[in-house]
Amino acid sequence: MISHYSFGRLTYKGETYTKDLIILIRGGEEKVLPNWWRKEGHLLQVEDLEEVFVFQPDYLIVGTGANGVMRIDRAVEEKAKALGITLEAYNTSEAVRRFNELLSSGKAIAGAFHLTC
Image (tube, rainbow, N blue to C red; front, side, top):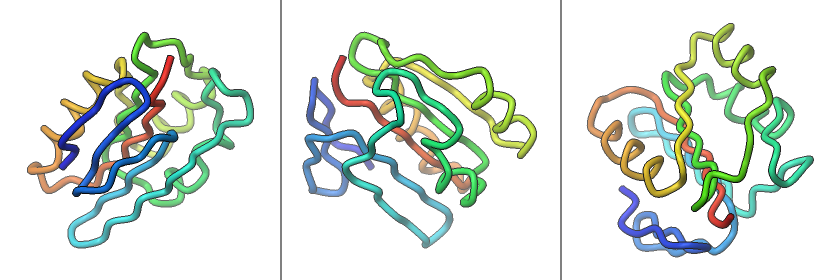
């Protein structure tokens, strides 16, 4: 569970991250990809989510930043749909809330969180 988010800081399972990150969870399998960088900082593109698409979660929750500055390329939406992944995007505080809500669902989830802007 993500216990805290504020501009530039996210705490997951007691560890605080100060750079963007991806969290992948399926059953007992869990992986954190810290220091997540995108090809273009505020544009989320398919190549930025390669590990997520290989993981093939049921849900991909995207935190677009504190103020929602990060945009999502249409190709990301199309790829997620083609793979049967439900893509939801929110400002990061709302994305954290939704991610935590889905944790108890038993579904495979991925969270891609932009922590600033």
